[in-house]
Length: 465
Image (tube, rainbow, N blue to C red; front, side, top):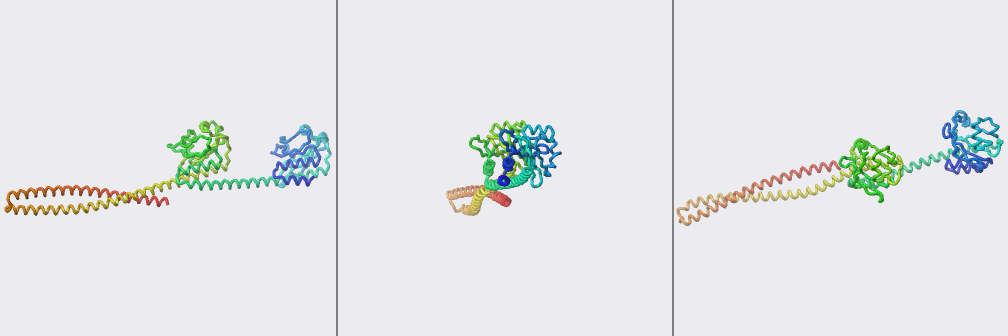
């Protein structure tokens, strides 16, 4: 029987299973009416945590006993290995209250052995009851019970260490799982090339990771207060994207707290001490929410990332809160990166358009130079024509004595027409020259503006890279 006890309790990995196997084996080994394990919960309170009892006798499982005097009178002696045997409670020297308690449990005789852990810590008591009649406990029975209690203590200690080790490993595995998910989510968020794409990826990852019913990002700036920029939600829920949340909690003081890292984890919106926002949350089917800030640049608050539980309440775990906080941080960094990328894309498009403008300006400049050259030739030709007119006038004067009056009149008419045409050509050339000068000024100004803009764009590209 002793070997059977050792085999059974050392096959158990849970303390509860060890205790139940122990009391069953002890009752069977001693052929008694009841065997229990009485665990010390505090200095003065104990509870029956395992029991095996014959039919027809009261059950004591989960019975709690409070005895303020127990610690002062008995704990140290039990820790030192004290064993108590009572063959007949009616003949024992016990206080009436103890006798009354035992009688309620139909106890006629009992055997009490301490359950000590390997470090000599008192876990509780292994108690054996005889209820049908008084019983004289033999030294062999006492020794066997003490040896069983020793093995039970070792098994409890091993199971406790195994449980602690398992919980630690489970915690490490869970932390690794969350870290892997966080790394994957971060990589996906930073793949967004625009701010809107970054936000869409962030809410999708937040909802999937936490298993929420909805995840949204909404603004906190005065111009976009409460506006939902991105959303990932279950099909059964009405969409919120583009709407404005009437959240009275978005006060200036609360927004300032978010700017310095405030996180709100609400397990039940109806347990928020009369916060009016709970009624507003209920309108959009929210029963629990987790909210973290998104910082886009230094202490600049872009908005809030929130995960909603809409069909039931939820107790948010510390690891979940920390994970969503990290997603908020990474979303902010990705927004800054995406904004720079958008500016670079816009600048490249502007540079492309500027290249077309440059070619147009260059062509205009070439054409102006050609017009100037042609105009210069025209002015030279007109000057030569004016010179010839002067020579012609001189020759006409010399020929007046040799020509008839009719020929002379004809020459004078021709001369006047030539002079008039020369003056018109001269005036037109001067006007055209003025217009060309103005056009040249405009073209030169455009060239200077292009050069200045190109230099600014080069400096911007250098800063971004």
